[in-house]
Amino acid sequence: MAISVASLASSFASLSFSSQISQKPYAVSLAHSKQFSFSLTSKIPRLVVSASVAEAPETKELETRENLLKLVKSRLPGGFAAQPIFGTGRRKSASARVVLQEGSGKIIINYRDAKEYLQGNPLWIQYVKTPLATLGYEASYDIFVKVEGGGLSGQAQAISLGIARALLKVSESHRKPLRVEGLLTRDARVVERKKVGLKKARKRPQFSKR
Image 1: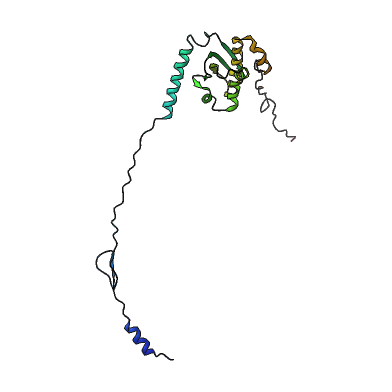
Image 2: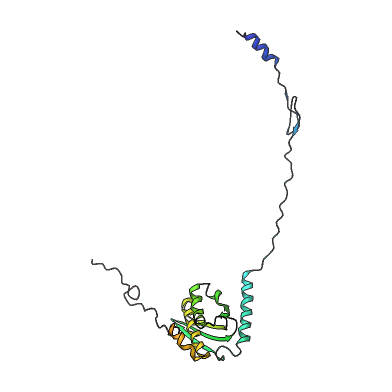
């Protein structure tokens, strides 16, 4: 079957497309269809932000230190040297004065909590608690410490020696278990001084033959 060009032209001519664009903005109308209107002026909801000023952590630390200072002064009338159970410990260049009192096991170092002062280091905290743990007095005595000089490691070991010496004043029977653990021995090791012409105590510069 052959389809003539004239019949195709007539069939296309019978088809009609009509579109009308209205003059209104953002409105499009098509023949034989419903009108849809789009508006771009929708309201944007406002975001309301409310902020409250929190209490600075520094103020809380100051309050706790003031409370600890009042506690120490109330528990130690006359100062550290006036207390009956008193011990002095030294390590490297650190020196610690320790006072023991019957209590619940609090440890206060330089008017601060021991865990805070020793920066939560488990080894240094263990140094401080070892003398009491050896005798089973972890929750029997409160410890008040004034320490100066050196670093935190040396200070923790100085406190340990001070606590051990103070426990001897509680009872002379404590000497043997403390001696067995080596807690009554003053560790006299210190850093060796630097020598002239060397980089450190014994480290030498690299040798060059020429």
